[in-house]
Image (cartoon, rainbow, N blue to C red; front, side):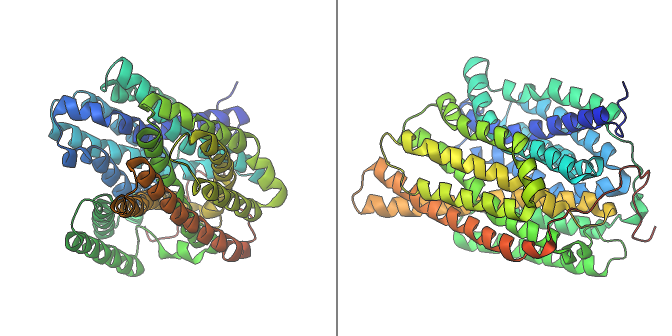
Length: 485
């Protein structure tokens, strides 16, 4: 049988390869988190330096996403995707072989860069492969499950690997998976001709946005550990760099991120909604894991198992339900319903007890999983619709960048709010478990507020888009040229 991307079987194989690559990248974000205490002991990390095992990856990933998206448009998304997988695999092997802190942190940065190159391509290739709205919704549903369910699976896998065969294997497991995905990608993904580097190789813009985003992500992830003057200084420098990037894009003949994409209401409104929704949901995953471990006393493995209902709910809804709902009611209505459901889940979390809390936590996990799996496929389709096909790599990179920045920003805000309220309760005489639970409750109120504002954007800004994805040609040998060559 043919495996050409123009056939149903060929598109399915391509979808599997793209989701496999994305899953590997997503898993790495949470699988490492579980192993941090073990890595700390093995490589003698000080508590203040241990965070850089995560931060180096986030900075490399978040900082390079826009550049990665544009490179896909210029030299071909398939080529960039495969290159990203190979770089990710090589860096994973270096992480496993790390004998000191510097080697591990440097390898994690390269791993983040490889993850950016691979992840930035996935959405752009999906919307090109799947032209029909119903098929596209199903493909995006699979992508959503991989992104959200993979995070919870990573917690379980990290606990199992760390406790049974050692922390090195959380990195080594990427090697066979990544190599297999790269080989299959070279065979089943559609060959593309990019616009050519001369059509959009904005070197100055690349330096400005990469430096600005890296410094911005650095500021966010270190905001809870650095004094405010330092944080304000690095944050201001990041703003200046990003403002310079915007000015550069407005004047460049071949911009890295064409500002015209923001004139498309679905792109601008979709990314603004995404920023708020992910800020709430990413912080929720982190805080719930802390609640299970520090308040209820769960070990890493049981923490992952406790979060499994969310993953299962996301799988069922995103793979079997969301596409049908979008086809019947339209993406804007489905998005609004999903965000409203998430808000209900956060409302339940604001009443978590400090003892025997899992019976109340379980329905919240189910509600949040259902809401997220309903909202994200609709939001992804909206944010990727309307833009010119030649900008699909840029829009995909933008979407992924917003997710990363939103996750880091939400985590910093919610962690700070929770810690501050916990200190207030301790000062007032509350016990440790009650104080921590009280801090988490307030953070969940803030997270719910983010989601409610996202809901307001969905029913106002996005409602006017009509919710109809723009068809994308699938038989085009070369993207439409919109800039000067």
